[in-house]
Length: 428
Image (cartoon, rainbow, N blue to C red; front, side):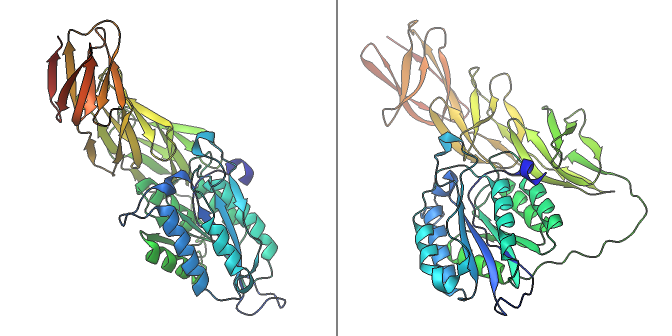
């Protein structure tokens, strides 16, 4: 069952599980360190430093400050294939388990050599790292510490995988560290740690990331409370906190089966306790937990382009560039999960980070041309790049606020797009 749930992305995982065997040193721990090298790690932090470079520095700082008797194995994902390959098997164990005193330089060198470029198969790397970690059964402690800047971009639900792994191995602990994450990624990472007896940490720079790594490796297992025997409770419920014209399919993450739908017509459904994923366009809000007798509310975000073009504007996943949904003159507003996306205007894009319960209006305006020929003419931005084509049959265009120009009969017609306004240009 775990195999069917496994999947991708960019993270740092440390693995430590707690058993005492005479063959191991008294303070010895085994750690699987998984470094996220997905494409999103090329993004820049507030300091201007790329995330992947900051993560490499944090690993070096952490390794140099960590005790020699820690048995460490370095893992990575997303570093071997560009995201255009959509490679959900891009996972690699870079070093075997050895005492850090003997492989510290190798760990740092392998981390420094990584190129951030691919997908984020979190489910699969959790399963592979946890399975491999079982060979370290003689260590006093074993733990997985997962560090990621994004959410799962492959199939499967990493929260459900973590829950199943923890149920299968009473000594396994998984800690997670969110590195400059958005809401959806934070939600997912928190769920993983919660269901695998771990803690969730958050970092936004090298110093905090290296500190989080050190804290996570020293953290004890979060013991689950003894189960309380009670009479059967009422099932829980899952509901949309704000109405949506769309129909969002709900799946059981353990079985993968469809269990219901949420919409403005059906804003809440009754469900047994478990972990679910909810579909928003072509994306999934994973790690949604329903508890018996309680209501779980999904507070979605709202995206709007009031003057959207009839040709439409694709909404892409910020990390993978896969199309999630589309806004157009026929549908100018929609509910999405709170995450980070790119909205397309011809070949131009704008990055938007959607937050729970908030409405984000994209700053755009429109232009209308009179006197265009049947053959297409291109609109260019100030860098001279082709943005979108127009013609007599498609004489309107919606663009991001900014400066543009149209080329026609060897003449250039400059114009300015202002937010929520339309400009009309008559050609000679």
